[in-house]
Image 1 (cartoon, helix red, strand yellow):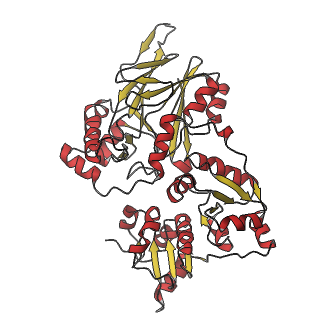
Image 2 (cartoon, rainbow, N blue to C red):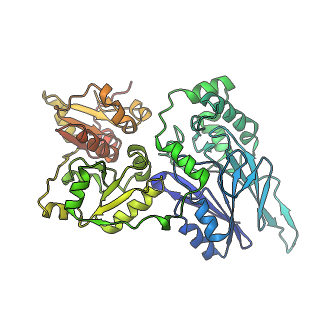
Image 3 (spheres, rainbow, N blue to C red):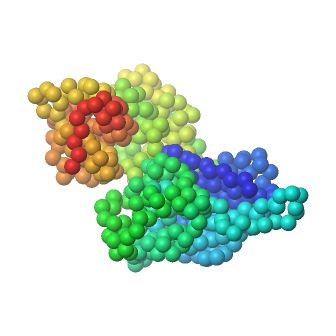
Length: 473
């Protein structure tokens, strides 16, 4: 059996290619599908099937394009209600590629249609024997968003239809205890996401594990009653990004091929200036330090170096006209592709020549000073008033933060501003784990009239490493 995981950092997304005897299957593909086709060709495989473990809400899948380009059959769980030709599978159904058996296990809980895929490879006997012996237990299980490493899928993304988070959490408990935990401890676990995804609350940075390891270390798999589990899984759920239901519906109907998106257009500085005065988002995809050194007033900074697609989908409503500011045309094109992965298809163009061209045209630039944690510590020691805003997620903040820092998670910052006791006229230091999210948050605060902003480079990680005091609730 040939088995390869493709991991996409900006979406914390894992997809898979499994091959045997000249045939292959792709599981949970990202929207741009060339890598699967190239890998299959390199290994001598024909892609026969494309399996989706569920209707993904956090990214747009490439299942329809991949099927159109390879002739593969698309496979969904029977509850998905996909509106294009596909094979609707149920518990116990099997798909075979070469000597590999893929058995479907219905695993509702994250969504009603969620399935997992049990992978069993047939081995040829030793000593010259030709007979095949199918192992009694599957070697691997692809769990989609049902079971993660260190977590399980959140239960509030079912999209209505009477499925409350409590009902879905109950389904998840039954799935875990009646199905997944009955597998052998040696069964390898391959989920669809890792740390950083918003489809769970406590995912590990590891991208694979075993049933045995998860049985021991995953908090959601520890002994507890169904009632306790439901209460735990439905408590303190972060609000799902607005783009989630939109992406799920795109996946239900199937996205258009990326090749059909309009070509990116080079825009002169004057054109970008005019568009910035209308309902367009100026999206600066450069690193925080470069953004801080000079940027278009009112632009938002979401750097390509971090989990760009997740934050672009979270902070910018789908359908909003976007103009990109990047280091080069190549980086702008990369941003277009990565935006399309979460359903953003409304990029109107990019600033030709970048910030240098804008500056040469004599147009206004804004700045965002970058400070070290040492400088932050000095500012805290001074009597002058300083607001510190921590834009990490609540569990991160709870694990330890800079003294007197105000929690304001980046994903909720725009809506929460009216409730936060912040003065736009006071010096405001913005901090996250490393300086990436805080730069995005600073750009949002700038849009809302904050005039004296500081981005803390290195973030809380650098603060703790330097030995400065830490508060915890």
